[in-house]
Length: 146
Image 1 (cartoon, rainbow, N blue to C red):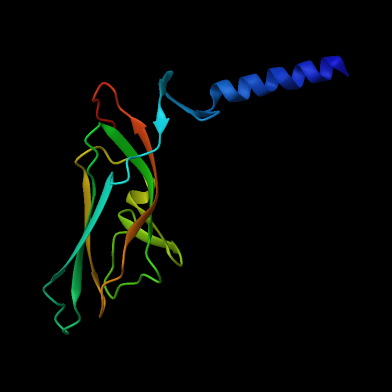
Image 2: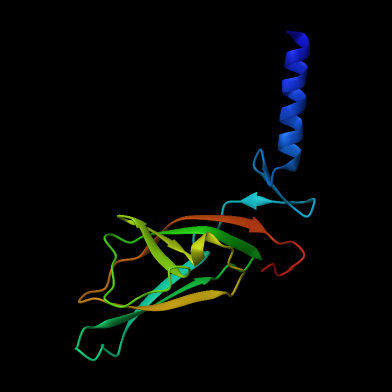
């Protein structure tokens, strides 16, 4: 019994040490990155009306930016978006609805400070869009990861 427990503990250590996410710590290239909560205004969403489609359906321009001034890298950005839909195609890697009131930005990938995603959608009315979740990590050396 004791040797079985030791083997399980050893196996758990091996699995944890090879994982990218270990007990809230993220490792890239063997270097620990600090995960943290983001300032409330890290992600800014703006919308404006642009020229309508040829049939007259209004188009809305959405710009989503990482405006963090403390060098935080945002990822897993979710937006409350109601029953969001569009009469024109939006690149799903930029923005897509996962469920009612849950849309994903940038396919969940990281956005460095100053990076923006923009797209147009066509609908009779603008959807209210607000950040519902974002994960951040600090980038103390100011390195840019792609």
